[in-house]
Length: 475
Ligand code: 6PG
Image (tube, rainbow, N blue to C red; front, side, top):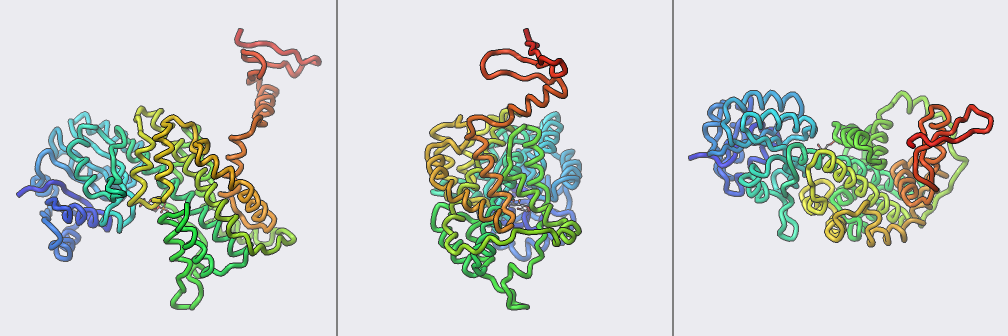
């Protein structure tokens, strides 16, 4: 008997993914660098399906039906390269090597190109949903050759989460496309989490609500347009009381947010592509600010506002600010996917990405259906903010959003996500931007030239001459 698919790397994610395949009736080859994990998988979960445990890479590869399909589930980075170096020589042309880790898309592009030369399909797959998702149905974002997807795709779609019967998995595009989309997913995840955290902080400090009361508010919001996994788990977290101290759990957790890098990558890639992902960037920087313990300690003595006052009726405004800022974060993330797709020739279907994020993944949310509809009605929409329904909703919410930003500012409560999303919204809708002045400054000190509003051409003003003559430089 041969295995339909194999998994090497049986940490929690790898183990649960292997179990998910087995539970769906696929015979799964299982391998781990140290054999104890393989044994543990068989002992604990062997009854869930057909597993073929393998002690060596050779035995593992020999147990796979051709074309071989093997998933690597190890720490992204050097470990992935080590596993590829170990297994690739054992594979044959036509075999499919799948990386299910959170790899950087540039690494995936490099690996795909190298393996393609040897006739091996390298498929970089973004997998979201954490441990539980891997087991019960994650959102899956596979990138690689369409040929590889033909035989691999149906298996992945089978084990993915389903929403209205539609699998949360689809072919994303060539080489690094899947990992790029997963990276942006994580960037949006950072923004979403930051915005929710700001909403909590404002309700707590500007409304004087307790964590328990805020949990109730979040539960109510979860019934509406903000309905999402992250809102749901936030309500759970906020209603939890620490066993040891009897205090709200959120009060005993150290307030220094960590990160493994995917949010930072999203911002770095966006900087390179020239896409303003301000919401995601603020979220990444807010995490790093929280970790600067020395600066924070020294800065505690800095002057704050002389008093903003509590606003007890402000929860509804915060909901509007949260929703609007969330629309901005997703709009920015989708713009980054659009730009990455254009840059690397991936031809990514944005509506399809919204579709596969509706279930299984960390950012699953009701309103992804709306995003899907927005891209279905206009695949070239320049920004989700101008989609008729989002434009109307955010238009209605913007006054509350502004009030929330004002209240935050007056009370000295940092709300970088809300504030910068609002600035982005106002930046996009402005008739004229002070970018004109920046162009003039650039021309003044560096003869960098500018264009005019009233006629074609590229111009330079000779600022050093008394009458400041203007010349056309492109004629
Ligand atoms: C997912 C998550 C996951 C990621 C965590 C932690 O989609 O299941 O994005 O891939 O590892 O969210 O990320 P940070 O440690 O950077 O917060």
